[in-house]
Length: 263
Ligand code: KIV
Ligand code: NA
Image (cartoon, rainbow, N blue to C red):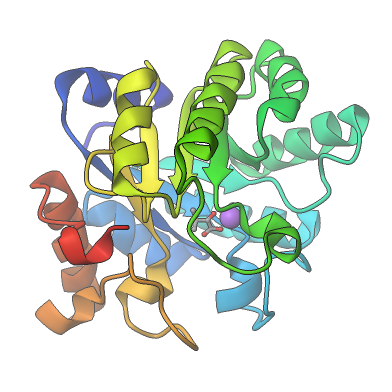
């Protein structure tokens, strides 16, 4: 695989070629994922749940994310390294710039930030300084206590329209990509068509430009109830390498997500 950059993802969107993304938190799994051809690795704050055992992503600190970013960066291969901005790193513009700077120094190549149109000023300041941004919309796990649980977002027409307007505002402010979590497939499709930047989906239907899942979910080792949009790729593989490759190929050939994984 040729080195993946933000421009690679934009070209993939223009060519109508889906790309695969997967979370990674350490050097060994990052290496296997990259070897499997997965275009984007995400050091997600989901590490708070799958590595640390918390009930949400809120306890994850900047230091935690930087540590895992450095681990993944050492063996990410040609994959693009996306990293989550942790909860409350957006508490002020100054802190936002500072914390994003730390993540870039640790090895991030694209920073993912949860937040709607109100994050536009922050996105503008970061992109001005050379920090590429992926804006995460829909189900934003850092606001789970406000949302009242991990629920499908953008179900009615007004909500869906608002999410598209929010995404537009963030793209206008400079965002290079949008990540859309847990929304009806129809909204995933509308978002993909409305925006010129790549839209990465998780539980957002089959028509987004990219797909992303949590590594532990595709290996079938997450605790508790797994969401509808998850598929355990270990069922059709006899190794972790095989499961990552099966996931990558299913995304590339649009066999994943299937109807049963969508809302
Ligand atoms: O933290 C994470 O793993 C994420 C993905 C689920 C998109 O944000
Ligand atoms: Na996250």
